[in-house]
Length: 142
Image 1: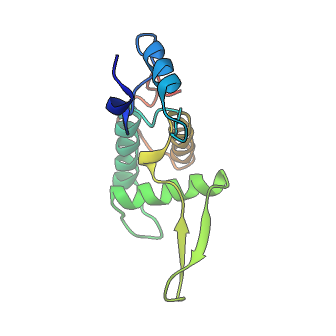
Image 2: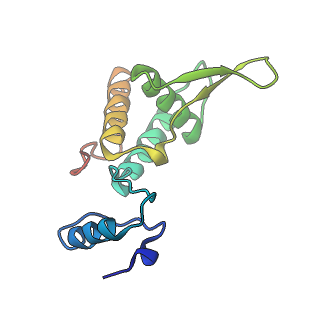
């Protein structure tokens, strides 16, 4: 079993094989230390799907009469989803001449939130007749 010093700043996935080791590490941790149990972040399949969907939209649609790239569409789609789910926070820009949208980045989204974002993009695509190049259902989204 790894000692407490081996586990400093470690991320260990909870599995049947690691559960007892983690319990022991918590029991032997000095007072004042922190433990965080958190949902896993998005899967590689989800990330790949998100980028494929943004690519499909970028190749088939214009926004305000302009062709946008994949990253621009991703920003628009994430912004829309964040507004729908009340995660958006707008603040004045540093120079006071505009606003800046603060919020999550997709790399920090959990599996369930990423699935929700993908579903939101699927709905947007359906409303705008986007033809997906991939099968949109990926087992394990949730």
